[in-house]
Length: 379
Image (cartoon, rainbow, N blue to C red):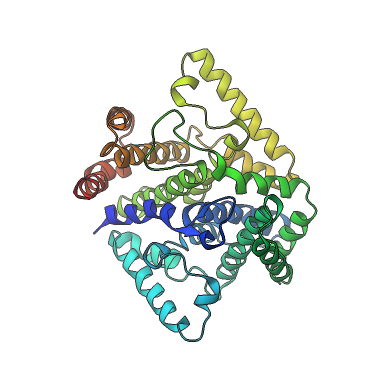
């Protein structure tokens, strides 16, 4: 059991670059990409069920989209053309499979069957697997479109046209609907822009950061922690009074309103009870405004995931836990080389110890935090 090593894999995703050889204007990473794919998968799941009347396993779709690229921490960023080359394609595929299985082996045995499905064969020939593959392509499309719009790099202009042709040829109705709506450059286009640009919202403003962070990479880590914690509580500790899909979806989208409001320093927001209530109302109204522009069939789910992300039920509490555990991880990574974060670390640790007694929190503090701290100190 190496759950701490698995958490380390999640952390390393932000250090795996994407598109870097083409000098993009907006830097990308496997973590940001995985966040976007997870967020898009939530929209696709709603389209499948609410618009098309086609029930899908939304937890499987979301979890596969979130963890499909964990193998890249072992392989690095490999060009698509290289993966498909006849000389090396078979060897790369075999190595990716081996790395994926190795990542699954880090986890507690009770979690491994689920992680195997989400990590080893996320883009199989099943309908969900085809959706995950199509979402991956669609994310590349909107990323290249942003580059083509904001820069003059000919590669991204050509790549966008190539990906648009490929995506437009899809036989999957939900993806066809999404692409058609995106091309209209109206409400769906604007909402997808919120998702795409979340990586421009920097976190920990006012602090000297050796580990860069933004809302997209944070949302990926927090959602991964939420999925891990939810599986742990359900499968190892027998807690079944919560909806795991709802938990992960809430965590993926909990900071999306910050693309409009920005990441306001927590201590400032909570200067007084009046200030806290004012910011709570502002953030709520911001999220409602973002959602209100979308077709009505999106509203119920997205209001739950974005406006009430930290609801008063168990799922909302678990979102708060994942959010605070990620802040603890950030401080843990920084404090070895940055004494300023020592105080932040102990403040975060104190909050968690005094406010939560959930099995996943006790497990994290007893095992995972110890492993992460040891790994950071010996480097």
